[in-house]
Length: 248
Image (cartoon, rainbow, N blue to C red; front, side, top):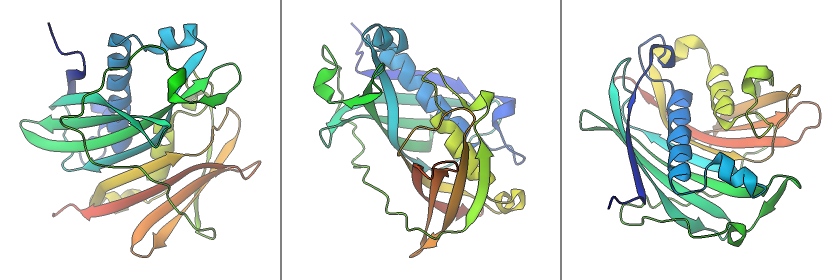
């Protein structure tokens, strides 16, 4: 009998997922992780249809990705993922490992919360019926804490939440936030550097028709960013990230 606690699959990097230097775009890698998590949740009986039948929904709350190398178009990436357990009495945590031709591509930890679909209210982990299989042997030791982003960072971009940004839960998909953050920096800046680490904490949902203003800057040697709904000022996300020269 196969071990359902660990999900494995292979991913081929598509032509529309790479950038002008033929590198897998970070937000496309994130989307691949979310899709793998969704497939594993379905195997365990907690996929989107099963959760909706119970009036529940998974909502990504926090994520961290450490990028080692970025595969190229048509490369085959091996992905492993597993549910790590509940952390901070609220988050269902999941780890990911990606390799390409035996070389490490990325490691990641994601945190989900369970939402009452009808009341749009966060529920405690005990509200999830049954037993979600855990796998702790290969756990990545990373607690995703709050990101203290100060006010007053410069505005780098403003983005409309249009049709293509909204997911089945009815708000902007988390991968779109990462895509917007990438677009806050000039195209030319990616010719000499790439993201090496990215943590995003999702603070509130953003709905169709709203705009997200993104402010970012360096604070004490690291890059910090925040996104806020332009119409209300409500915080949408906080991020901490690092760059690495392409020569390294």
